[in-house]
Image (tube, rainbow, N blue to C red; front, top):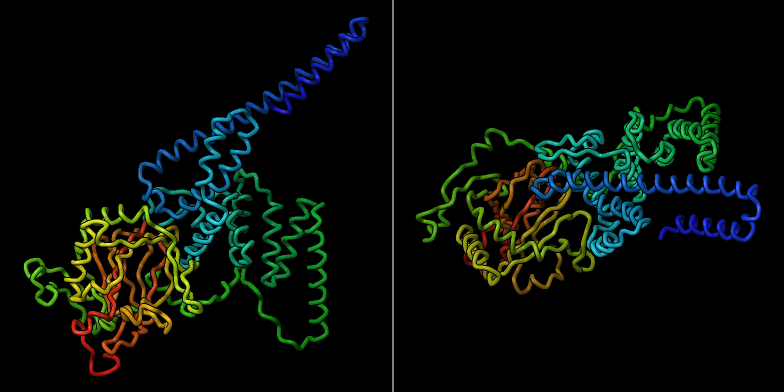
Length: 535
């Protein structure tokens, strides 16, 4: 029973008890009960209105979710191919459904609450929502998308368009703020404020937005704009203590700045911190960040016509491999040096679906080896899930392995298991080497280093998701059923540092790949040493 209703009934009981005890002796006194009952009716009506409003909110949410889930379940991968849809799904399950749970908990719908409580253990966590928000920011940076473009869902190749509300933009900005990322805090709080100013209905107040925005701007050293935003905040809420304190502090710093300028008029004027409120993105740990992201956007180095003439298409029979003489593979040069080739029709749609079916139950967050400790760990620069398939899992795995052996002329006996990877929202793997540079790596002694990489594309990607090589500027775009191949080592066994490569963030689409790493052992005579260190 509702606590509020219990109070109403308790009041009724008390009144009746008082009437029975004293009021029946005086009609004049009983008139007070009329007014008391009138008050009870008004209170009861308010309770009913509150319940109806609550039920109306729940009904509206249910109808909205019914429409949305009907659309999303008809084509889950297609729907989630749009990164805004993926972000909002994570946000809904982690935040919005919890708010609905709190609303429904005020009622006696025990069946729904029990079901929701059971299901909630499988819901995304706060960490998931944070990760999804950071994925949108990563796409924003890599593909130079302004917040307006992402918020409105204007992305290329999207089948299901979606947009971000003021609350969503505010949530993005708050995630960045909590991570100490004031660059994205400013961008997303400005977008939230813009949509708020345009009259979008929201429960987030301008005061909340300005509170975050003014402090983030201050972190960039833009005192004038921080002061302006704080004054605007105080004009909306003059009792905001933190804003008042911040304003006094900002004004004190401005006064100090003016005094210093007046004392030293010969000093050259300082460069403005920002032009029109636009701040520079801070540098990070990746030295080739700009080159890498430019390649992801398709702005890489273009081959000269002379070099392009060195690239050919041909039929490849694996050096007259008996299995390929009758049905050779189509081979295309993607790059001349280092030599990267693409093979066509390597995997059929049926094989791809079977491989995905085998891999899905085993998918786990992809790991990297810590360069200091050698221990496998998850990392923010590798955002995907992967699984490893053995030949005993299904005949199709053995068939695909055998085909890769026939194409490359290398043995799979010492190769690693077939790795299957699925890139999630904004999924990426920043520039890295496939070969090991760690002397303590135990596999180097037994199997040798990773000699070559054979990468199968098991899906098309509507936008983004290229495999790029920042050192020399190659960008290879996914095409379902094709595969690319390159050697990671020179014939001498030394690592070819030009093969440092990356998997660009998936902007729109769902990217599936599988790969086989061939090792040195067992391939000594299949790929013999050269005459020099760099042959």
